[in-house]
Length: 61
Image (cartoon, rainbow, N blue to C red; front, top):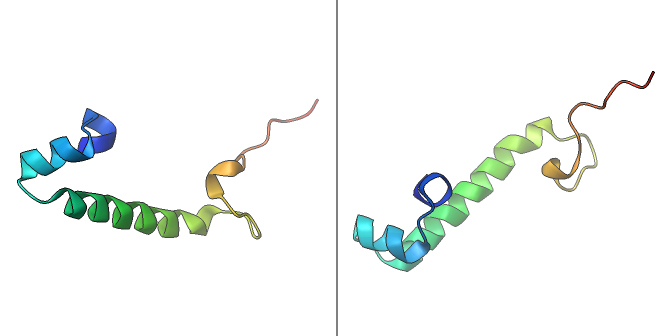
């Protein structure tokens, strides 16, 4: 949240939360991994990257 919505850098987050920068990086890594796993449900079979495919194709007239 602090990184993506507020725009804080790793060091700023570490300072604000008073935790090591390595902990910040690890937590963000784990969150990204968990999000990727959760989104795999919506990926078409065989898709390597869920974000690389369109969910809806425009209708052709």
